Image 1 (cartoon, helix red, strand yellow):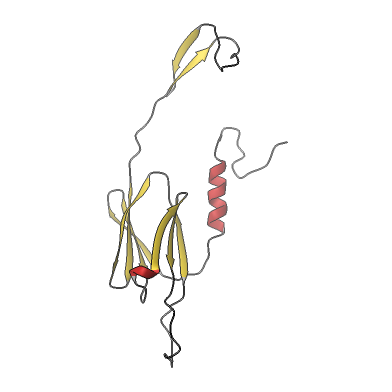
Image 2 (cartoon, rainbow, N blue to C red):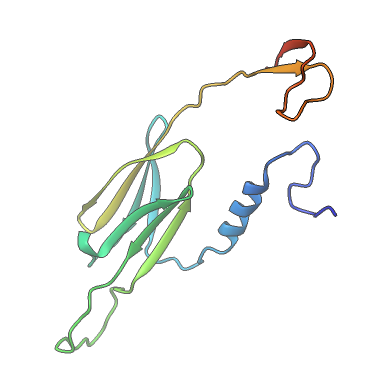
Length: 155
């Protein structure tokens, strides 16, 4: 039985993880809180900046899980002694996530003037060439043929 996927070309082998990524992206919250910027700060370097006014370092968590960057903020419990006439500064908990491409690494994070900055760096991948052995005949139980072998380079 075959299944129909977004990547249903017979030439796209092993791209099931891309479909999983697209499904994760479609489930992200459209909520715009907290607001953020993404800027390029150098060759292969990015900085994500989130406006997290009112959050201390103890209330923030940055983690990477399965190539997904999660930024979570848990608001402080406020006592009943504060009575607001107007409350325009959001102080609710949040989770913001970004999907990271392979090769992107987190260099660090710092909190300054109510802004959480997360620096990322993308390595330039080196091209890899593998040589595949072609064997004559059917493979035996160990996965190899006992017949003659020929090597072909694959670019």
